[in-house]
Each structure stands twice: as C-alpha cells, then as structure tokens.
Length: 321
Image 1 (tube, rainbow, N blue to C red):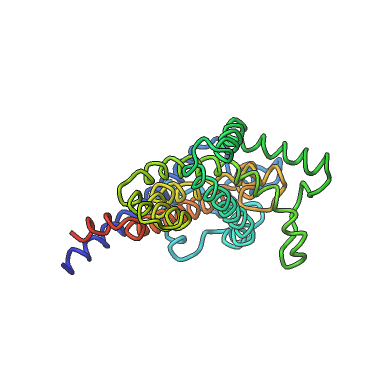
Image 2 (tube, rainbow, N blue to C red; image 1 turned 135 degrees about the vertical axis):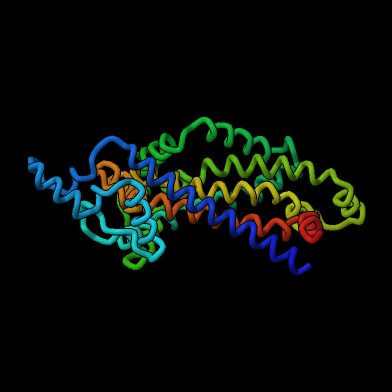
C-alpha cells in the first residue's frame, strides 16, 4: 500500500519535471529562430564588425546553440537568469519588480470573476428562465461578443473620458496611496474579469442544473432542507469539479492575458516588460519570463489536480484502489 502511494506521488513529480524541461527547451529554441540579432542591443549604432564580434564573445552568443542552452539552464537551476542585454541589470531583479503588478491583476480578476459567477450561476441553475437567468444570459452573450482589448477601450472611454470617475492610465503603488491604487486597478480588473465571468457562469449553470436533478439532491428537497443549504452544501461542491479544472487554466490565461491589458492601461507589469524586451531583442529576459510563467502555470494545475479528491469523494476512492 505504501509502495503504491509512493509511486502515485513520484509519477506526477516526474511528469512535472519533464514538462518544465520541455518548456525550457522550446522557449530557448523558439527565441533562437526569431529574426534579428541580440548583438544589436549590445552595441551602439554604426558599430564595427570587431565591436560586434567582441560583444558576441563577451555574452557567449558565439558559442554553439547546445552549449548556450546548457549554460543558460545551468544558471537558471542556480537561480541566475543572467543580465539584461539593454539595462545590464539582473533579469530576476527586473522580474521581481514587475511580477507583483501582473500577479495582483490576475488574482483580483479571478476573485472578481468567481464572486460574480458563483451566485449568478447557482441561482440561474435553480431558477432557469427566471429574471436573473435572463439578464445573466443577455449580459454574458454581449460580453462574449466583445474582445477583451475592445472592452478595455470601451471602459476607458465610458468611465475615464465621459464620466471622469476613474483614472485610465498609469499605476500607483498600494504603499503610496491605497485608495488611489484601487482606483487605478478597477478598470484593468474589470476588463480581465468580464470574459472569465462568462465562462464561469455558463459552466457552473450547466453543471448545477445536472446536479440538482440527481437523486441525492432530490432527497434533500424531500426532507425539507433549506434551499440555501441544498444549493451550497450539496449541489455546489459536486458541481465545482469542472469549475476548479477550468480555473487552473484560466489563471494561466490571465497571467498571459495581462499583456494586452497592461499595454492599454500603461501598467508596469510583466506584459510591458516582455513587449519591450522583444522589441529590443533582449531575449534573455523573454526566456526567463516565459519559463517562470510556465512553471507557475504547471504548479497551479498541480494544485488543481490535488483538489479533485476533496471535491469529489469518488476520485478519492478510485485513487485509493
């Protein structure tokens, strides 16, 4: 029994490490195939061939691709992602300065999306065709037809330009002014959360409607239990299986989706860092950001897999056998 549990825990870890290695190889090779020479960002305009060759040798760009990959991944394993070609600052320092903005934006967007979708989805499933269900269906259909970048521009025009209620561009640190910080982050969060509300609401409604027709839920109604207890305790937990699965994917998508939103609202996050690094051919920064984002995405989905037995006892029984 102990041997089986050890094997079950070792296999996911092995898959996780294999995926991380494959991502690192893919990131390195894809950036190698991008047109352009990173040396252009290391030398001044009009540099001679000797200066370019010296810069290439100083940064190891003259080495074979395989040697450069193992040199880079060896440094990554020691916590050294190298130095930016353009700013000469450690890559990890630049990421540490920008990551809190993107993470806060993604987490708050996820929280807002779930806070709206859970009650709306549950009640729409309990009262299909009711007033709340009709309003939710109309709003989700309208939101689904609008891309996130278009929605962001519309929110800027409505709340920033026309009404003047919220700032449209820039960023204020929470430590400097908490109130202004919240005012600056409202529109970006709404832009990201709107699309996820559509997905969560429709997914939860469909699962809840199926769960409410199952025998164990119908028996709780026959026993006269309060409606809120039936919906929250007996139906919602079982219906959250698909929602939790999709949430792991959505968090990864939000982390990547912040790129466009950060550009629209001029936020100093990872999105701006990646775009500026690509434009300046600072590929070592792009490699680090993509690798860390993939690592975070894999970790989140591993946590989601571990949550399945808690949500559905049937999964626990299958894994025990």
